[in-house]
Image (cartoon, rainbow, N blue to C red; front, side, top):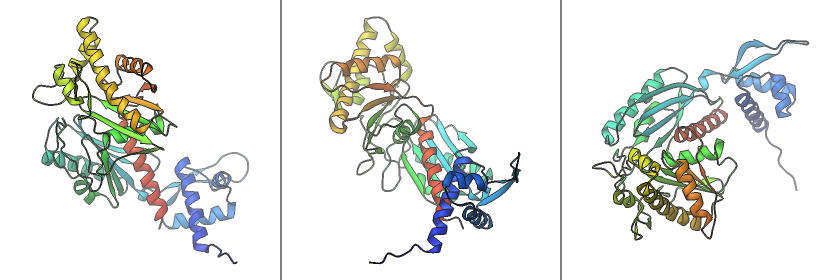
Length: 375
């Protein structure tokens, strides 16, 4: 039985991939250093660097090694390799970044948007900040990743207006807004899912393959990570916990979103949680504060207990401005200590985790794009 040998073109392609990944990790590197890191022979590395330089992917930085022996040239990626557009849509505003293949933010723009701007306003602001980033001139935008603080339809990338969602931008289509500005694909996902990915990659859940990330702020959300991946569900709505029934202040079963209405902790005229009022209530040392803390912890624990039963996580991560409050973390950990299935509860550890998660994924997509089409 004969086995076909890989073609010369395939071998060159594999070598080029190893060389490019070494450059991406080091940012600037010599051919000798590439050979040492990859185990590829120096002549083969030199051939690859020549090919990639002729293709406009690698450039000689003009820097040289010092010390004994022959000076070596440092190589890096060309600016023509471009950047990934990373955008975040939240009540605090729309942020757009251009991020290069080294993970560096080379341009950033931001505009306020308000809590319920509607699809037309949101689309205009997103288009404006993304266009300003594009004009910053750090090479072409090869692909885009968008984080949105609303449910996201998994198939289309459109935002979906579910009942009682406090941050409303209607049926905004980020793909349609951003697509004219980039050469490649546009990926949109919910901000809580991106936050969970960030905590898994560089936060308190680093190295944990099975955990639940619960976001408790003006809005309510949850991301379920199993076997190392965020589970988005059939439509992309996995983790929408606002209408999950739990224990209310009177001991009756109510949707989680109604608990805040019963406690007088909603912003007037909306279903958004009044975060300032909530912080004041749980900080109260009197009987009222104790009652609110107990009611909130019981309600949230009911949701988390359901998540534990269905997903069997190793860890529960609490994010959001009041979810990560030490008082809430401690109270929920005490609740789980008395439960039949005890799971550790820890506060989220990252700032802007949603854009950090989108940024990390965007860099990975950009690198794959560069490697797949170096010429």
